[in-house]
Image 1 (cartoon, rainbow, N blue to C red):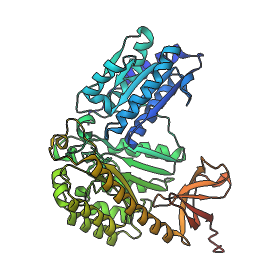
Image 2: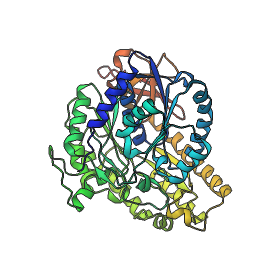
Image 3: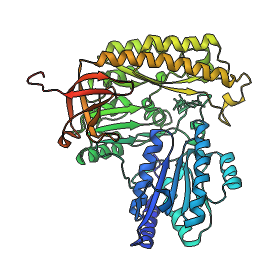
Image 4: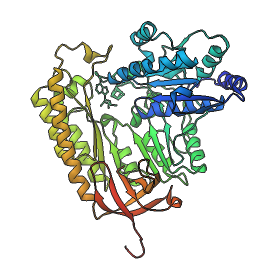
Length: 476
Ligand code: 5AD
Ligand code: SF4
């Protein structure tokens, strides 16, 4: 697999670090969108800290303001433009450097709009040019001329960038990038380029290092994780098998063997690629969490076809059945889009029907958002806004009712909780998560942080459960 040479990047990090030495400079970063973007932001933070910037949440004192944008839905654009309006003041007052990166910057019409309406930015870069960021910054510091560093390419693999992770217990690890599925509503394949996987060795070694540093939970990331290494095999792109890893299932098994790691999660798999070997690996690997995120998008076979999802309602339900049979204690979460072009009341009822049947642990609900350049945007039978919103509210009601029922089922059970730290809203309690990713708050000392411990669930609230540490010996 083609890897980008980051020698220049590392040298420019050094150069900027020297210029900034002793100046007490600060940076602020805004991240929008998915966990892959959050992972990219952690790399940007890693680079900025190496360049002698320290993080601040106070925009007024930031010398460098970075936006890592998303373009999956339109509301991210509104958010970016709103925030840029605010940032303009600080630019005028203190001369902060403004850098805008991420998926939205791969969209030409957005960059044009930025130039017209927000011409005060200094750097634009896309997700393919992350490693160029220090070089762009160096050039800006030296001669203050705006830089646009967006590459219209399929994208390569970048290895070895510095990283500053948000948590010291949970770490996300991108295993692949890009997407070849071209779901008709989705902009991702156009902005993140073609699907490509990291070398097994790079992933395994990164996770071993994380285990050495004390990380307990690994989230494997990709737009389509269960087709890890598929494109490479199909196109005879060479990769090196390492510790038996030559597919997603074998990757799960290899990570499961890494000492010190206690939990493994992954997002997002595609239902059409959910092969039996992956189901077996989830079932047999004790560290792989039994919560599977299985994006449904729509429950209607007709709509799924126009979405180019390549499965029917029945195939999805059969897959769920098979997984439930093979994986004890399986829980499921999903993504659903309402108001896709041409969605009738009957189609929508099919979506509600699947939700009723599957009983998801969590549903991420989205109102269909038109994305320039995608096939669905060109469809003439767009659903009126009012209907989309009404359907969204109906789906939300059903989901909330199900979550309430599900939460009640937790009360009285004992769950293994990975304790993540003190609650951000209440210093007196700890928070952690169940295998099924439910937030649990409980009392306890700081020395429990980072451990997986049993707790008895004593009460439920809409978005969290309350638990008490469970003494295994006494059963109290
Ligand atoms: N409109 C609404 N939701 C979308 N998603 C992707 N594209 C769109 C769109 N154009 C949702 C899908 C996907 C999740 C990450 O975002 O449900 O799984
Ligand atoms: Fe978008 Fe579909 Fe690819 Fe997911 S699988 S990133 S929804 S095109």
